[in-house]
Amino acid sequence: MSSEERMYKCPKCGKEFSKEEMEILPGVKCPYCGWRIVVKLRPPVVKTVKAI
Picture 1: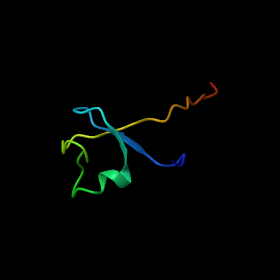
Picture 2 (picture 1 turned 135 degrees about the vertical axis):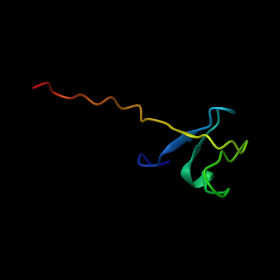
Picture 3 (picture 1 turned 90 degrees about the horizontal axis):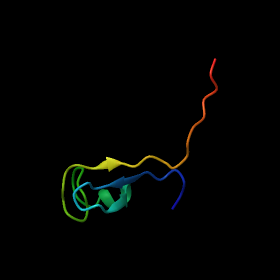
Picture 4 (picture 1 turned 30 degrees about the horizontal axis):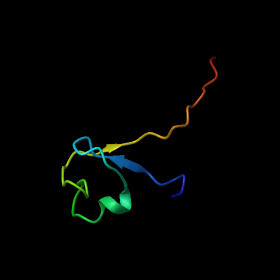
């Protein structure tokens, strides 16, 4: 899995999947349970911003 690949999670069944797996079904749906609400996971990297 590349670092640029976005991961998604279904809040109903809790499974994580990639965009390629999500494209199996038409529209935006969980490929495991078919629920139409999908959450994009954030990367585990914390960004540090220097204060002015």
